[in-house]
Image 1 (cartoon, rainbow over the protein chains, first blue to last red):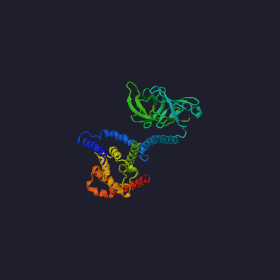
Image 2 (image 1 turned 120 degrees about the vertical axis):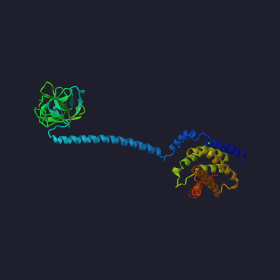
Image 3 (image 1 turned 180 degrees about the vertical axis):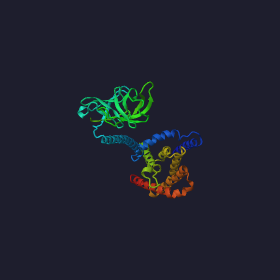
Image 4 (image 1 turned 90 degrees about the horizontal axis):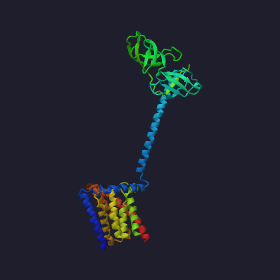
Amino acid sequence: MEKKILRVYLLFFCISLLFIVIDGFSDIKLRDKSYDFLSLNFRNFFSKLLPGDGLKEENSRLLNKIATLSYERQVYDELKKENQELKKILEFRFNYPNLIIPVEVERRTPEEINLSYQIEKGTSDGIERNAAVISFKGVVGKVLKVGKNTSIVQTLKNYNSAISIKDTRSEAQGILKWNKKFFIEGIPEYADLKEGDTLVTSGKGSVFPKGLPVGIVTYVRKKPNDYSLDTEVTPFENFNKIDVVFIIKK
Amino acid sequence: MKILTLFLLSSFALFLSLNSGKIFLIGNISFKPIIILLYFVTLYWNPLYGLFAGFFLGFLYEIYFPVFTGTYPLIFTSVVLGLKVVENKIFKFRYNSLILLFCTVLFIGVLQVVIEADKIDAIFYIVFTQLIPEAVLNSAVGLVILYFIKKFK
């Protein structure tokens, strides 16, 4: 045998043995340190070379699919919500056949300062001044100003609003007004009014039809030195969160 | 040029070896391109190249099949030396010389089972069900390579 080959073999043998001894019998784990880095790059290199190695591509494809499905799920949820809203509107319109088409609230004035809405419907859509405006839950207000294509709705949450109401239990009547809180004006101290009573429109005046839900009495006390009651009413509708309103034809 | 050829052949063998499970796996039987490369380089080209290829491929092979660092370089270079020792005792251009390749693949297979899997209890079962068919498969590949070597000699 050629001496050169034997010498090279002995050199490689010694180096290999040294590595085995270092790796196996000392605390220095070559495999865990230098090989980690090398193997990472090496594996990536060879993984890219082989077209059939689909694990990474499969993983990437699945991640994309998850993202797409997640997005579609969000869209689906939105559509479901919208569908429910439309169903609700349809049922609501069925109950009130003389309603005109529902109107989306475009703009609203800042909270607590004579809340009003601007809507993108006007005389061209059959809206008239002082038409009653309601929502799913109850009375919202009335049409204050009408343009050809836009209108202003004055909500109940307005210093100038006044609506004739009655107690569904005792038939006691009064005027609902707002001054930083809703209260009933002109209700005598002997009137049968209790906390928890439901208020609806009385039908007096030419604006609101009879029987539209308005709110619940949440506070009743006798006013000192007066012959009327101090009351507080919570309306059914949250006027700051309305998106769709209905206008009742006269 | 020879070094470059050796490098390319080694890279190709390593690539095939690391992906043999995806390309050539038949049941548990896999293709061993590195051993075939070492066999033919040592016997039909230059044993010194076989030693270098075995040493460096051994280290790279350990990246995928981790044992104690230096084990595979030791095994591969020893196999190359063993092939060099028996080189003069066989007629290497005859097809029956491939029995040596068969024995080499079988020997390394047994070593792998002992080192990696630590399944000495089941060694006979593994030899008959996996290692001998594996040696036959690799000898068959060696047969094709030897055919071309003889043709272009």
